[in-house]
Picture (cartoon, one colour):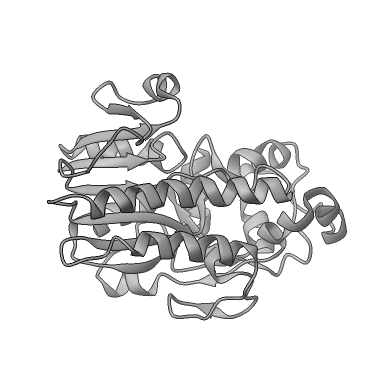
Length: 297
């Protein structure tokens, strides 16, 4: 297949693109920084600087849209919220316009979203049918999904990736946490009772490939079948690193440090991959300790 990818140098893209190449696909990555992309990606990858000069996507069999400003890197000021939204909405709208302008459009658009779509739902078991809690992450993801869904037609199916916390080497949440935990300074956040919906990068990539190859559409929770509480996660990570992990970070301190974005670590979703499993997808990594051992190693 000839596949167009946005966000190809991000956490998921860096693992997805090599897999696509290994399977014999031709990959074109859209990026704002071609030089950085060339230094990070295989020389077989075609690199485009933006989509402004592109008229259609007739040449592509599939589009995988993973672009977006990292959501947890900065405090959510009004300006940062705007950047988070526009970095997702604008490129998705452009892709949809190109797909609808094509005579022979790609057969599938696989577009990013997040379990943040549901907001903080506490103890509720969250499948793709669960009504969301109306907060900023929901508003961001809901419009992101609504824009992507406009590409749906009898020629193009749309799959939406409601992705949880991705465990991967050299990036993501673990890159931020490992230094503290290795010094024995890790521990639960707030009460530690909040749920974390997580997924190993291998299962994330395999899940995308599954959606690419099967006639599926709609939203999919890209999470392990076994979400865990923050307290269990921090205890297990400490165990994997052979370090104590009992220094609890008070919720008030986290809110002071992170502001509104503290909901990302003090809230969560007890999300389950119902539709993915019902479609026949099998997870490789469903045990938290085994997954963390693999990634940390």
